[in-house]
Image (cartoon, rainbow, N blue to C red):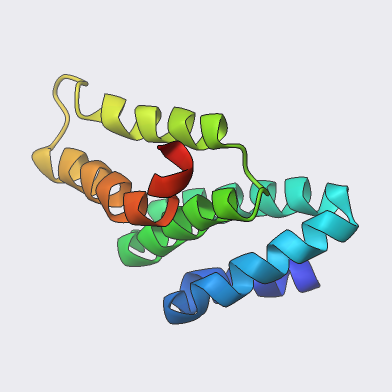
Length: 119
């Protein structure tokens, strides 16, 4: 139940993101399995938001995932791999410009949350 609640607040309360990422980091420190389950649930929710055309909420989820790197819930190389996938979308052929723009926007808007860890 906590897992579902945290996924919901990550999507709907972006202004409280750092509080909730810290909480997830603390829960992960006490129960290592929680972090993996939470990240899987967040990725599922990200896919669902994109299918439902909830792109602003999807951006909030990408930022939340980025901030989880600071809490050592997600490894920095894993986040870099996700960012590379986002950028690779722009190199696909016959893709609408709006799609490319959204992926670049999601990537660039989440960099400030994880930039120091990637440096």
